[in-house]
Length: 239
Image (cartoon, rainbow, N blue to C red):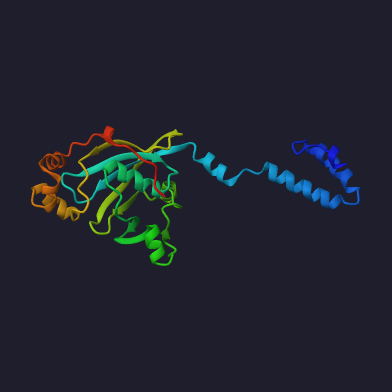
């Protein structure tokens, strides 16, 4: 009898009529249960594909990222999908500034001089998964924006302690393009391992061990700070 029944895509009325007939048989209950399970599974959407479809189009979040303490100021204006996570933002900042990604990083939401929320895989593991510690793979830009958080800090490299202030500047158009974009900026990236802001100041003055390693031509280019957004190449966010 089951072989002659309607398919899983049958109209509701046709399926109900068939179920009534099946119920009249001895093994009706078991058959109906199996049909119900098949019908349910055929209409379900794979959660991963649903998440992927959600990320196909999104508003672009426009951000200004300023490297605190640099003079002249080093900054970038970037945009990326508003549902991007903070691992993606980390990679976008690294690529747009020219950092090498060799140090640890974390994002901080502060209020009144106190850290209210920390986004860091490493710190979350070290401090036992505190309730105000979140993974950069789980938290998205929109998560903060939806709670009215429009400014926060990005700290890169535990030794040099580069602090970046991130400020939300608005939304761009809805786009299916997942690649970040840089549309403004000034200044070139400081050398990795130069000792943070104070070390970079000495580097610009020519009074730093790295000056000889970099050579006069590159040192002068960094001093001039002429940034060309077209030179930026965004890679795939690392896991």
